[in-house]
Length: 136
Image 1 (cartoon, rainbow, N blue to C red):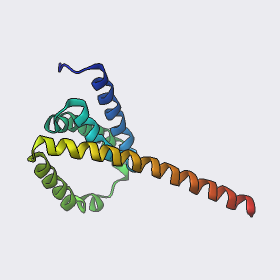
Image 2 (tube, one colour):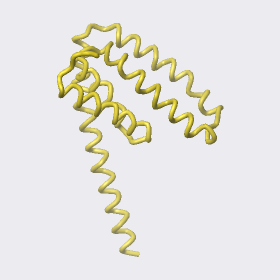
Image 3 (tube, rainbow, N blue to C red):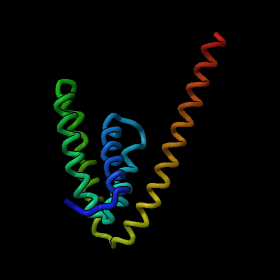
Image 4 (spheres, rainbow, N blue to C red):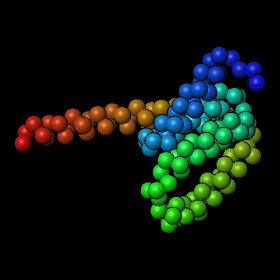
């Protein structure tokens, strides 16, 4: 068992929870998981190693649950983009750790700001729809 501080365990648990939320399709949530995991374990390579089993288990649950509602053609059309993502991840992990760490802080901040902006925009749209319904 790795030695982590209590705040790191809490951040890791929160990251695992956010992976589950991201699997539901919540916009922008998945982008903050990688920076949070880097902050949790302190190393980008270890963060990827910790995140992969969580993602794999979540994928197994998703496949079991949604297996009757899939279209193989749509899934197969994603293969080129998956390969691009894998190549991009390999390039990113070959970078110096300090470069990855700086980018993680930047992405965590910009992702949190983007999530707050999306929530505010959705709230504004809901209010606008409610006002339109009242005017009719």
